[in-house]
Image 1 (cartoon, rainbow over the protein chains, first blue to last red):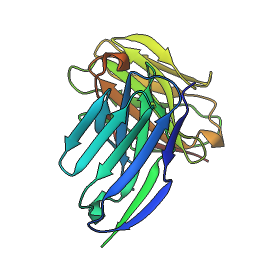
Image 2 (image 1 turned 90 degrees about the vertical axis):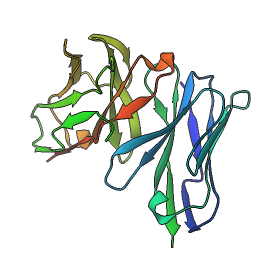
Image 3 (image 1 turned 135 degrees about the horizontal axis):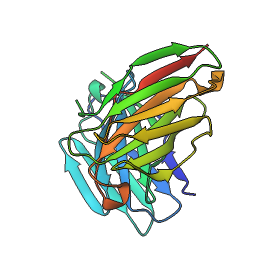
Image 4 (image 1 turned 45 degrees about the vertical axis):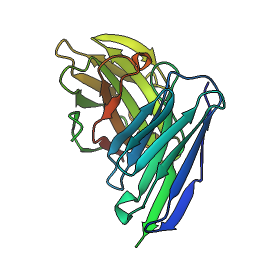
Length: 107
Length: 115
């Protein structure tokens, strides 16, 4: 069974700061997903990665397959980025989830 | 809007009852996944259907069952409900199976409260 660890569990930062959330997993995977969950509960898929790096607006996701590690970066953070960010891996069907990182960006 | 529709959004029912949650996937998506999110367990994979057939099973209780119909919508049936079944139930869909490296899109979830 794949163990997915995220850090930090909670993060409070000031608007404009550069944010990094980390994810490690224990077993080889097909793909890694970064998800965002807002207080209303809905889940949005941000990235799906199997190698390298992806960028979407102010969000950047990287993955190191050899080290079984991924990072999600947010540049120029904004209060609307406040949400729970969840890392999930697909090994190979369904998803195994991390416990999430609760991010608060203060104005 | 992800294109995945879940109904109902909220459901309150009594212990021992049976409920059915419904999911309509994005147009063209063949896979439907069901997930449970509870406060103590976090998000957990329950079951996957691909083009009408069960493809993978996760931590799904025997009291729960699911199916995917010819029009690709799916239903999750929860029976003999217990207080601990109170959770958010998410459906997600993708073009292929997860091993095909296709992105999953999530519905807004059904919040089930068992009283």
